[in-house]
Length: 263
Image: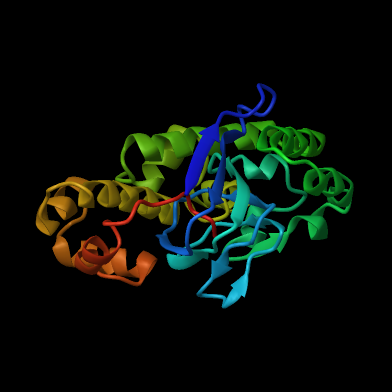
């Protein structure tokens, strides 16, 4: 299994966190992927990944909206793919609709952008990842159109605040800080992030718990350090997003090396 990542071109750097690629030249490999609060585009040039939840192979090229429940993904021997990871609020700068429309869904890229067929013909004919990535970057640059930049900026500032507080922040206080109503902030998040600010904060808090579960902390300590009221609240939230208890997740999943979210 080969997994690498790089930063995008300078023109895309404010919008794309990283571009990563994975090749599986060994055996079939199953990974549990969980909500990360980010939207991705995935481009397969080898055998597509298989979603056990959907019981189907992923599209050759697709965009994957916010997901609110973890699932198992199977990487088939011979898999090869490139992933584009947007910042939580920046996929909106490339899409002609509010990103909430694809929350919990994936859409084939050619169903949104018909001219991807032109880029795809180049993509499937080239034989190396640097060239494939250049093709994807050129395609994305052609789609970059920031509508209402002030709205995108507010969403970005609020996303950063939520990260800075580990998800433990009152949404009303956040709205007041940026001189918008709580209702307006919620609308901006649905347009730019795909989910409401409260749900996004829950996912950020859960990420802290995931990181702590990889270390030698008790579940009570993980709950406390992540900012949950008590262990019962932690378990309930964890199960809501993963379908698993923290104990089972730690016991069965963290022994495996994880790959970036692909759904």
